[in-house]
Amino acid sequence: KIQFENDGSAFFMNSVGIGSQSPAQTLDIMSANPVIRLTDTDPSGVYSQIDGAGGDLILAADGGAGSSNSFISLRVDGTDANAEKLRITSDGKFGFGTGANIDERGHIETGSGNCRLKLQTGNTAVAGFVLQTSAKRFDIQAQNNFFHIYDNTAGTERLRIASDGVITGRGEL
Image (cartoon, rainbow, N blue to C red; front, side, top):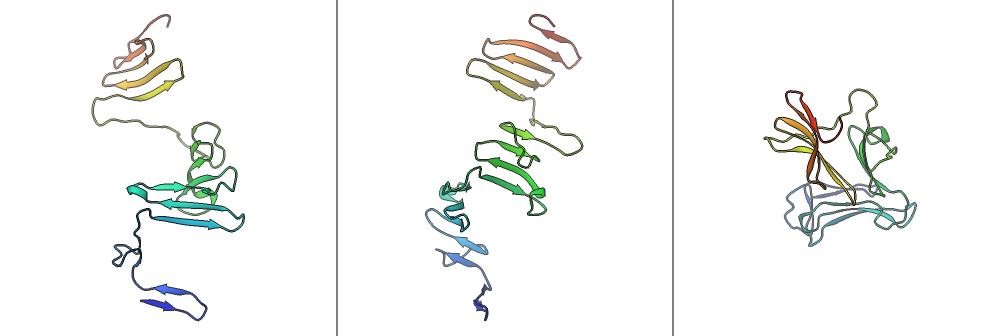
């Protein structure tokens, strides 16, 4: 049922289907490539999209490439900039809690309290980081009973700290 008001607005009293005669949700868009496009008129030529092609979720900011320095922002408990929790910039950088102040490829910041990143496995598998350039690869990782830095390029362990605190390594310590 559609209800029309004197001011020209309309209200849908039940679910709405676009391309669907039996909408499964409040708004159900059914298509071979379902896309919601949000077009800005000032400046013109700028739009964003929510795309569901092939079961994927694709968020596109500035699809018309009409604005420089576009970003995707996820905000929680409000809509202003202070509610921003994650930002992805047009040059591929991401930041948690940074606002627009992202100065590295990945940046995590907090205004107060601890600022830590946790990597955890559900068993005795490896939790760690890989640091790699075009010439070298180092694995920094924790395993069941030790922490170590492994030079993957040379195929050798460079530093190990065992669970009992014993430190071993190659070269000077």
